[in-house]
Length: 110
Image (cartoon, rainbow, N blue to C red; front, side):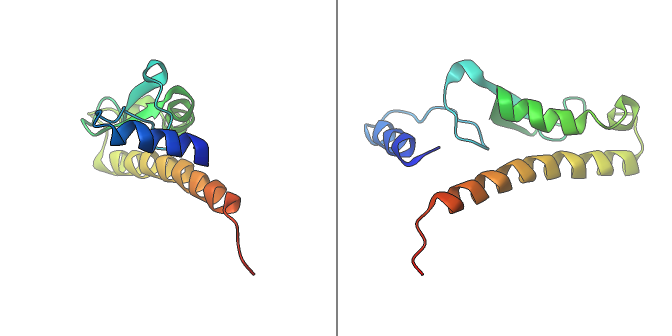
């Protein structure tokens, strides 16, 4: 989200309107592209975060690298722990990259 998009987002919210649901990673707030992501997997978690289709696909691709049996409700606790770590790590990686990009866009006085 660049400075102009952010300013428009703040302006919309100051008017007393309910803030739109936005992607937890990139800030996209177009309701047509927002999906609810099950952080620990659809089969094992009610913990959801809104993500745009693009961010959702990236994070789900990481989750899908683990065998479906290893991420099912019947999986061992070790497999589920590994899946949880992968899921949260993929989300944090996307958030971290977004923070790095924002930081790089900021003017730095040296």
